[in-house]
Image (cartoon, rainbow, N blue to C red; front, top):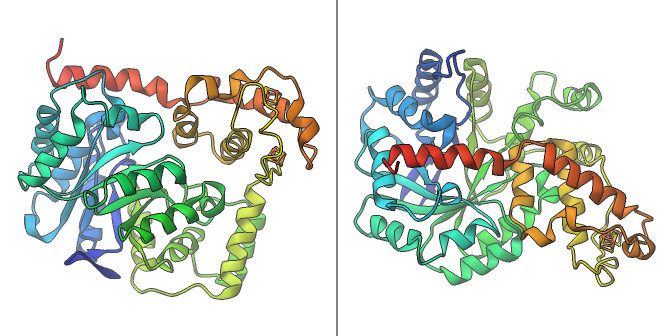
Length: 394
Ligand code: SF4
Ligand code: SF4
């Protein structure tokens, strides 16, 4: 297992993400498979297990704790998250924090994150009525949180602003990063910002929810030519291993065979060769089959609705790769009057665009996708109800 030193800790570079455990038909977690996967991972040296209050409708924390119960508590690290983005309103934050502690069968978290910060959710996290930041800092100061960070789905501008404002409060930031999002979702810029602030980069979605492990036949063939023995996923992980400030790479494993393949990849660090790296970027380009926007912003000045057109187009391209809750989260972060449905189809932007992009058509399609796709907002309602139930809020 590859390890790295992080603020005095020896962390396995592969972390076990607990959000994709297999479930039975009745919705319960397939605990036997979880136990087998954890045994393999733990015995091979994985020492970081990452869960969150809402994962698997609240069942992930329990399943993780059950699978870890036979191992000494000091031999592994637990990461959990505070669901500020999913609250039904101001709640008793400490009561919710304690529920997570109980479910995880521990009295402290090694790592704790403010979950899913973006341009929209930051307003809740910073709202004095919600009192989230002071409560979480208090848990840290009382030793119930050893290392504090946040997971981030916003843009580089907000990230820079937050890291400057909260200098010294956080030790790490978890971002979506892989060889496709390196450019598609500005992961490169975010990696550089976090690194410049002296914090560790934690990576989620290293193979983009499996999309980079299930490539087209043509793209798979390109990788097979480079190394016939290696899995497609392994190339994605090695891309991340080459980034020195990526301290933690979280993989949401749900099958024993996947654990075995990942353990093979993390046994040693094998830097990508130039041709391997070039091939990955070539594959990334082929996946960005969407609109060829160059982000020049010539279209923005004339937009009567003051929409951030290049940002919306990048969301569209993102959606085209995978219509996931992750991709809709980027739109959730916008104020309602900046969402794609506000385009009035005046066509100013299309006239200004040197690439000849039919922007109104693209935005109309994006608005439609956003309405019909798997929306984060739709999941929010059931999460609100779960939190109310857990806190006996009636
Ligand atoms: S067509 Fe839509 S995006 Fe383009 S300028 Fe008009 S309102 Fe703005
Ligand atoms: S003018 Fe065209 S290429 Fe430039 S940002 Fe706007 S849509 Fe993209």
